[in-house]
Image 1 (cartoon, rainbow, N blue to C red):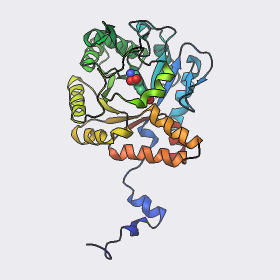
Image 2 (cartoon, helix red, strand yellow):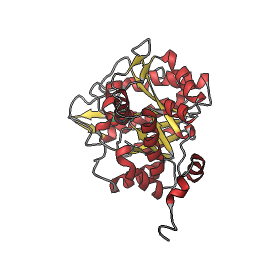
Image 3 (spheres, helix red, strand yellow):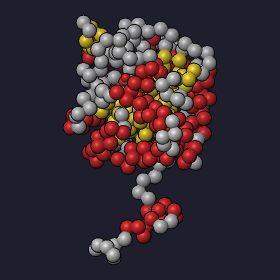
Image 4 (cartoon, rainbow, N blue to C red):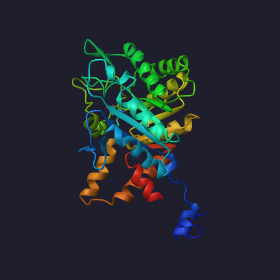
Length: 323
Ligand code: PBG
């Protein structure tokens, strides 16, 4: 049937009608709020490249996590900056390291908050790479052991979910075995499965001072030109024991999110990354766009593409706007 019998505008007549036929609904329950905690500051420090986002000292972290939880956001994702960095990222393993302390502060304060930790070396190494460097190359297999130890130490501190973001081959399997051997059979793995080598991470690297000191991440993160390879990465991570898979970044990779959602029977997370966030903020600050509408449109597009879970720096604002 075509016009004049078919008139799609009939269903757009009023807000109540539009609400009735709306296909995608955003909800704070599907959001994860990233939090930065630093061992080298005593007061919250604004991150210049990410307007509205701060590095927090340990004493503030449970309060911030609780603020998100009270807005209906069930989970936070923690990134840490250690007091000192070295070639192997050894500070990331300490039982009294910044992340370990932050996890236990949050869980003690409010055990209902789902605490997720980023498992990677780049924030802890002086060279800024996500693994152990040998002869100017990131050594895959040497990195697995330290990542597994890091994940166990996060679980030991009380983390509910560990999220490896390093993109080494075999890391999900190594982490799953280590967790199980240490009795953490219920610790969830959210794998950054299809993580692309993206220019959209720029502001984040500023936040945790993790830009690689030589070279780039092209030998481990994915080529933005590839889609089939993303499905292979996800398949491997699932075979190794991932519980939740992630596509990162989100906006330039909506096709990958859609493919992941249709191919695999697990929750799919999408990371609306720092560069995507800061573009919106800068546009809004310059009166080029309405921040609320822009943000909700972007989050809707990510959910419509198929993401079950969205990690976003806009989580608090979004939860307020949706509430
Ligand atoms: C660490 C990591 C990065 C991000 C999350 N975990 C940076 C990177 O790979 O360089 C980026 C997050 C963002 O840009 O918001 N490997």
